[in-house]
Amino acid sequence: MAASTKSTNPPIAPNGSSGAFIELRGIHKRFGRQEILRGIDLSIHHGETLCIIGPSGEGKTVMMKHIIGLIQPDKGDIFVEGICVNHLREREMAPIRQKVSMLFQNAALFDRMTVEENVAFPLWESGVRDRTEIKLRVREALEVVDLQEHMDKYPTSLSGGMRKRAGIARAIVTRSECILYDEPTASLDPIGSDVIDQMILRMQRRFGITSIVVTHDMKSLFKIANRVAMLRRGVIKFLGTPDELRATPDPEIQDFINGRSNITG
Image (cartoon, rainbow, N blue to C red):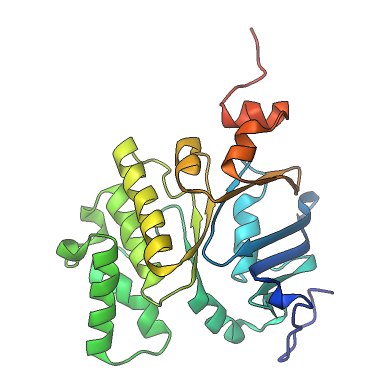
């Protein structure tokens, strides 16, 4: 189905009742002469943590941005709970972005807002005006990420790990069902990385939140992932459990997960 036609009645996935929360079907994307995605087919299930791996520049973040409509495919369709999101107008994406939030690498916090104001921002944007409700939901979100004692601070006074936790709080304050993480443990020390990993696990267990995590951190992957997808040369090269990833005989995958280059000298 062409991605260019917009409709107020977007198509419904024919097998939308299959249990998949998010589906990518035949996704192609090119920037200039560079073909980034060459036919991505992937289903993400409710409540799972799917880690996406692959060498840098393979289009992992590009693939995630398609899910929340920040990038449109040249060909193919993306379904969220059976609704084809690439056929929605921008104003029609609001309900989708309440279900699916994205945490960027730097958490994208506003420096001139306190942690509390940053976390409250999506609620104001979505039209919530009851200050009591906003304060309650912000406090709940900050409690989940253990930042309630830092709500009056500004992002510049927070550590890298704390900024990422504030970004997670902002993602869940709208009661999102799914969070997309772009390298959540990048630039963090081992303890900071473990805090983020434990938070992802806690939100899965406590709220059933679906997580899609782009990562190069193999230790983190084997701790949090239910399934792993490896993106290579624009397609899904591997899809399976962490145990299946460890056991695969593919030398390219083994070199990647064990951090081995083929350069000798």
